[in-house]
Length: 183
Ligand SMILES: CC(C)(COP(=O)(O)OP(=O)(O)OC[C@H]1O[C@@H](n2cnc3c(N)ncnc32)[C@H](O)[C@@H]1OP(=O)(O)O)[C@@H](O)C(=O)NCCC(=O)NCCS
Image 1 (cartoon, rainbow, N blue to C red):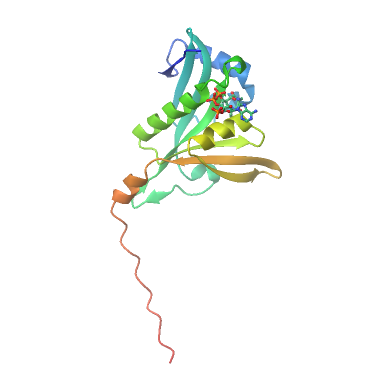
Image 2: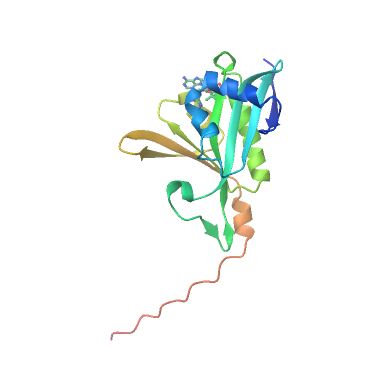
């Protein structure tokens, strides 16, 4: 199956086709696209088209690292670090297993790197084996976490900018505390 990947934004005339595909294939992900959670951040959408029809999609928001986990924004020196957080990722059932999901992830990784994101992140429930296989094959690390009382899931994180951090001058060392001699 031949496919091509395009980047669309909310002003694209074909935006409703993306919403229609998501509604059919992964309605559980709709609140992340239509709801408030990521509205404060700029989002980026990639669609996979086969014979002009939307067969797959991936959307991520660029957000600071930290606040979503109720932590302060992570800084290196005075630079705030940001991440590409994937909040929609799905391929129509009849088109699965042909590399579309992997190709969407690769385009997102490339774009996130261009945007200066420090990492790509996503969260997935247990049992989504195809999704986990795609992520692990691309080099994501996996961090299991329980949400709320009992929702078991996995954070997947792919670092992108280790070189950029290393090339940044380190912050001045904090003053060393001199220990008083007691003898
Ligand atoms: C996850 C998803 C987007 C992957 O799309 P895709 O186009 O099939 O992805 P690819 O073809 O690039 O790769 C799928 C891989 O998973 C493997 N796979 C498929 N079904 C599998 C299963 N039930 N268990 C384990 N691996 C599976 C395929 O063999 C392939 O691996 P390979 O390339 O090493 O053979 C698609 O399965 C999907 O839409 N799932 C439902 C929505 C979802 O779970 N989204 C994730 C949101 S958290």
